[in-house]
Image 1 (cartoon, one colour):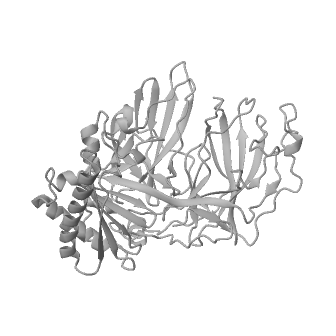
Image 2 (cartoon, rainbow, N blue to C red):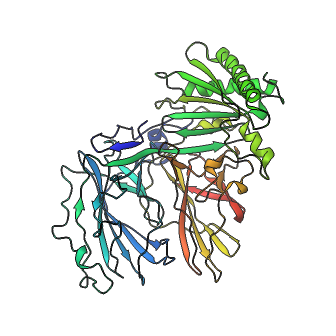
Image 3 (cartoon, rainbow, N blue to C red):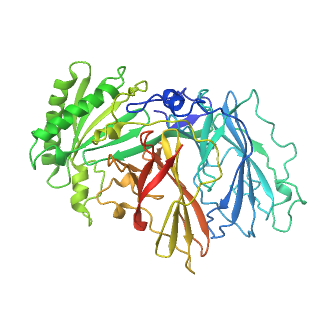
Length: 528
């Protein structure tokens, strides 16, 4: 799949009602649950958030961020927004927020801004050409930024990158031509602290539309759902179901146990439903832990994959092409040799099914939700969340090392749920809380443990399925957590942060939050 979108390439058309195994059709579910049917998309610009944004100097001042338009032209998507720093703010500062990103919460496609070959953004130009912009207390800066053209089917997006959490339900405006840029930009007149604009005047910038050399990252949200039996990673149009080998094989053996045969037969049912009939290849991949030499592990991984392939062929017949690969110990998902070595090695011993999934599959309402672990492959989609600047009430709270955690309700947004959390530094010193990392999840997959709130997980009380913080995959090993980064918390300051997870089934109304060093919190409500 494409990971860099040149300006000359029109974005792929992606259905805004993508449904996969294990979810009732969105329209049927919504009409049964809400008699009025799907929500109407209405424009109500500006969409505004207020809060404290991390800065590299520690001047984490209160900021107002407003999206004033999101226009889809024939060539690209244009976002206009305004930023106002409300507190005292001095010197050169860099905002530590993640890159501006538009997310289609239905399909999982993600889009970032067009950049030039020096990494500078198109749109509002930095007056000195260095990526820095003049800021004056209480003065509003107006910005323009360019993204790849969103598919015609996308009516609403979720925006992240303001430093103030996920802004859901931003409507896309179809226009023949974008709104003209400012006629007389004034940024060059206000470059120093002693040259603020006149009262009530905004700062505007010269505009540079993308040229033929402009490139923008586009990718997919990558989700990870885990159980004692299996885990599923979904990335773009490809899905990988991983069966944990410790429930499949005895030590140093490649023949399936009786229990493993049952697991593979049930996995075959899932595969028959999920695999795209136009691309019917299923690759069965064997992996080992790091004990033993390369030749031994390569051979064992192939033999185990062949055992699974043979049984799978009995179940699936001739409708699918089955390929076998043995990758030995070359692709571990967890780091071995640490304090959780046994768990890490168990995680690395696995057999995977890799395939392109069928985007048209829908499970009937009569079919029971699979909660035995293979249900990890199910994707559950509702409608995009409407815009709100209210995270809801505090439903639980905790404390660790002088940092207070407040937990707000989970909120459904398409195929995901958004967890909103506030962190307050109650000490007299700046601190960086230890919120993520593999030390919080014994043997957990490193890719989904590190980074922002990586130690946080959602667990379904009934099924036991565990949902990790989602990642954005931009190809070539480049990932970004689907959340704002946690940086230095200044004394007495409160910060609002979000972590986004793959959504549970639509009838799940509560989930348990595993919040790293803060502990576990039960019965966090899931709201629509």
